[in-house]
Length: 336
Image (tube, rainbow, N blue to C red; front, top):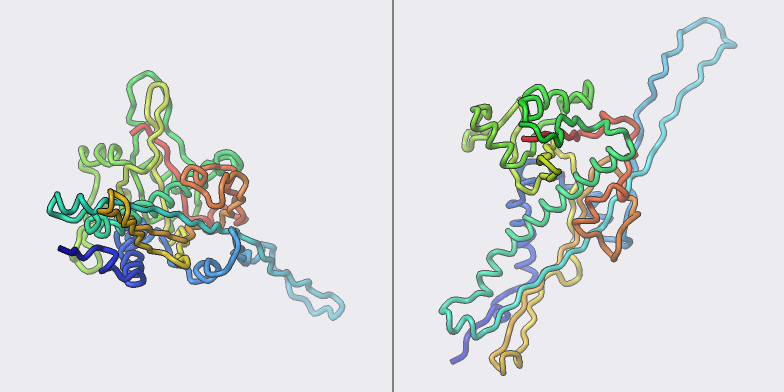
């Protein structure tokens, strides 16, 4: 009896579109507005090169204006608008899953069908991994090279009991936001570890407000939307864990995707399993996740494209926007 397999039923181009759209719908960062779909990044991805330039105009200077006079020989000198250059990195990641056809016959259900159903969720988690890795790299660079002017650290590695002053609080969030000065209102989201969220919940400090359509309740703290993820760094020291709590502005990270030549492929191997056969579903994603104003330096990449670990490295990032307050990101480090 013949059996219709995934390789018979799947339409790669249709499946790729489904996978792409559903990945972003299921990505916590995309759904919360942290990612901004960037058409310019997408057009650059469609071209060549591992990195590509993202030019920007600097703001007008803060020189005092000239005082007017009636002297025809006294001429004012105009200022000029200067440009800078940001750099984004192309990323191509791949992942495949394989199963033997005999498994489906004996189990009574098709594991490959289940694999296909879960591909979008898998890639959504990977996009969130990329976003958090990028944030870790950005703040690691800031601590190393910019005197940590985007960071408020109230944590310690003391062997003593954790105090209230070392835990997240309204005051601590406000101090972290103040690193942006009068631009701090741009920080609209707080991304925290579930352990930190639990502490806030126990103290009944998280508010729940209806969304703009009144269909969902949105958790907020200190006036900021709360997003909970255990992918947020929880760094163990000798005595304590230090939690990184991210304050993020809407559209802080540019995101774009451009499909590779063959983004989805089903590879059957009829002779495997002594002729029963196997099937492998391959998926390939080409994308960019870029923090505006922080250029990618490509200083420490072992292969053709960066890994999650390499996205976290301070050496691969360098701030290029002239003012700290132009970058809607801040980091609060706590012990809970």
